[in-house]
Length: 313
Image (tube, rainbow, N blue to C red; front, side, top):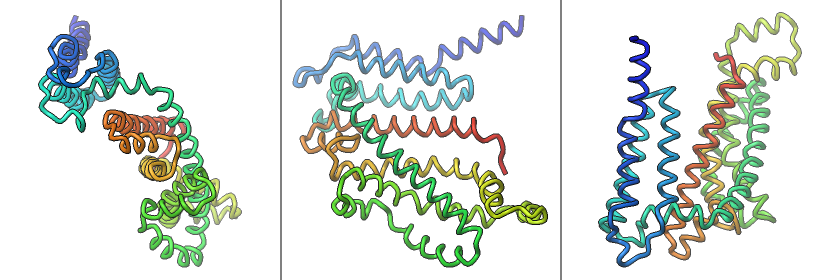
């Protein structure tokens, strides 16, 4: 009886909580309360906004199974922000609608411009994966070699440390102009923005590896190739995947800036074009979409890390 009561209580708390209350208030406000902004500016139908709110609520409901309190807190912050945005802008018209558009209009962009948004996403994803993959392969490969050979490490590490202090965002406009095509420029900008971090981290990982592992391998007369790619690389792999979250965020940021400079399509281009025409509704929608892409890619990396890596040091 107690177990049944606890199950019912947990189910009740999962359904009746602050995020559920905020979701209900947003839906009621969007559907039934009069809009002051609608007098001087057209407000789109609220169904796309309500759909987004419901999806957010459902997402965090699934998160309750793993970390209940954290999911409730994060969902409350997100939904609370959306409720304030809806009430302050759409219902009471307290903010300049040109710069702070109604949430109904912002989320309607995903319905109206979905073809352009998806096309830009596909293009950006291709550039991102190309530059990101190239930097991982070369950064990890050269980092292992430089970390393993003391003379090479002492020669290249100070140079890499000096170059890495210059953000790729500073010289990305020059690369976009200098390279023959925007595709090659974007891939190279992403590569430069992430290679040096991976390269230096890999050198440091190899330098801090447990000497007992190295000495044992030497006693067994392990060849250099086996030492590098079957001992040192697996040892460093958990740290490499942990670094990828930061590296991925830097890659998306670098790509977005490059696209805002010289692209003709892509996520960054969509935001830049919207800003050029002072269409802040589309630009905010583009920014939200970029944030969702980064969140989704980081979640995919987290799943891959759990599936691929069963060990840690």
